[in-house]
Length: 158
Length: 158
Image (cartoon, rainbow over the protein chains, first blue to last red):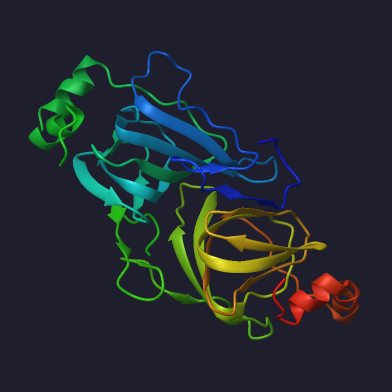
């Protein structure tokens, strides 16, 4: 999508298996090769010079997952399709269509699609924001010491 | 919803005819008695001191419509359910589930649900924003001089 596009309406494209919109390119989820993830696409639905936030759509294919990370900025998430689970801080929660997820500042988080269904979600973020941090060995060990978190991180459905 | 709620996940409530979420109150669309509208509810899904924008959900019942207005701030809209049409500037466009609508600054706009279906949409806005302006007689007359806009404003489906 070009910034400040003058397209008043951009149409949802329901023709494929994944959610798509006219004039919205499907991008790699991450360009940082060091950030581990699996089967995730990113589409920027709204990003404009005259708005202080962006609205993105991420789609995690069945069995896939986003990067485990944290940052100072907050994520405001609305699940648009599918099923899955999220790790947020000390918690693992199943999520489905239209559920709302808040990821507060400096909170480890990861989204996983169900084994047999994609997980597509909107994510609102401030346009000006810090870069994500990946867990070091110590942080990862701390997370893995909680059985529910360890099971989630191993890819076992909650 | 309380600001900075520590509810990580707030569940979608699919039990009723209208879209609802746990811990998200259903509010009047407008509290300004001078702003004409019909059958619209407002739910604030995300509004936090640590985010620069808000995400709201508006649901227009079948046959209803939002207020015709304009303002300096931009609306970023994603239709979540149903069918309808919108007037944005000089254009009237039919919209349906998951379509994206951009309302640029100082652009007259109104959303109308179809006669037989609700129109529910997300709207991202900057948290700091100006108040809407209503059209005066002259502005309304100018809009009504375009047949497609006049038909829309009379409630005739495009």
